[in-house]
Image (cartoon, rainbow, N blue to C red; front, top):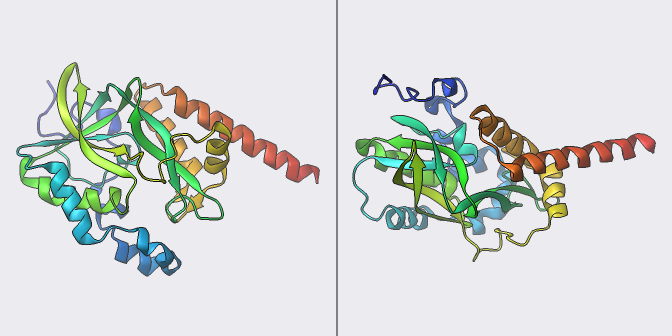
Length: 249
């Protein structure tokens, strides 16, 4: 029987594949720390939420939640949640999909001259990822850390969605695509997706590395996501073609 005190009791295969929250870059992530290391990003400050705005968004999203909290992860939170969690489980959000429609030209994984793309949770046929359970006494501290990272600026709507864990349904906090914000490009073409992921890079790394991490992590869990695997295949073909063009010159 799984050890209830071991966060990885149900998924021991993830023990070495999820970053230690105590040493995670995102544990102490803040706008101030980013600007101290990368002062050129100060130009994007008008886009950034103030602490007061972000805390108001967090309070509204949690809506007086009590008890343990499940957080549904579909992107980088899967391998680097930066949260102290009591349990991690494979989970599925029916009616949703992981889509590369989050335009990044603010320095994370893309810049204005070479925008990148990241994933957002949108409507769809189902999204499989991971769910992290936060103990009730840790919810306030851990969600403050989480919102500093995920809600640094607009483009997501935090909220609760039903997820399924081992056949049982439970609500989980997650971050949904905000189609009312221009950084969510719901009508982006496949060619634009490929180009942005192939060339986008910023202080957090490249858009391609982000996509590769998603494909690798879900693949390790036996999850198939045709949107992501197909994108990575096409991105690598695009990069190979660029390399061949350079060599032919």
